[in-house]
Length: 232
Ligand SMILES: [Zn+2]
Ligand SMILES: [Zn+2]
Ligand SMILES: [Zn+2]
Ligand SMILES: [Zn+2]
Image 1 (cartoon, rainbow, N blue to C red):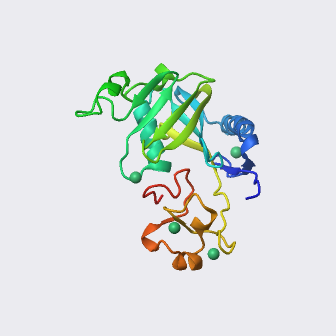
Image 2: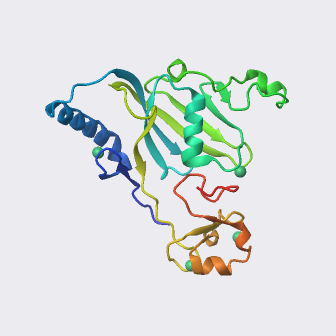
Image 3: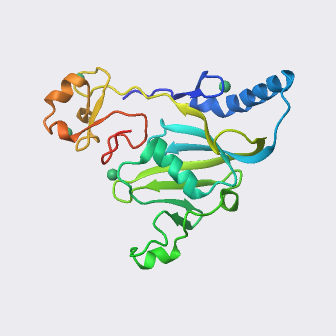
């Protein structure tokens, strides 16, 4: 596959920018929106602290999101958001690895795996207890066919308290993936063969794929595409 420049959409202005320039763009875009609101006579409402996060697939960096998250949200809230937008297939366990500490969705559950769990914290921890600007950590979903995400805290800022406690500021556009057989855009991926080029298929080639239609998953805009039963 040739190297493509990853691009994404800014949710504030709907403009398309490269992954590399998005952080800069968002700063400018937020400032502009703010200035415009003040110029229009909008009186700023109550402010609250928010983290600006970037999340990306550890091994699929072409899937990424910029998020604005209230600092009073918990790791469990962020985990749920990541599941809803990118990960959830069948309720697997997940964990954040922050420094040497693991915060697991399974911690404290009755009948856990025993010894290991005693070192794990639950996810019911406020973000401002564990996050600070510059921090990098990892999120893992499903300890069998794991999807790993890199999470980076870019900044802590005061923003007007409005909207959802977790908001998407920007998100990657779907990377173009081509059928490994004929080169048309791929719409399906075989769960058995997703590691091979031939496992990514257009509609016509999908019908002829040897593993059968039961193994096929839709090509979706997520780092979990083609894994387990993930359908988006
Ligand atoms: Zn923008
Ligand atoms: Zn699953
Ligand atoms: Zn094809
Ligand atoms: Zn297959």
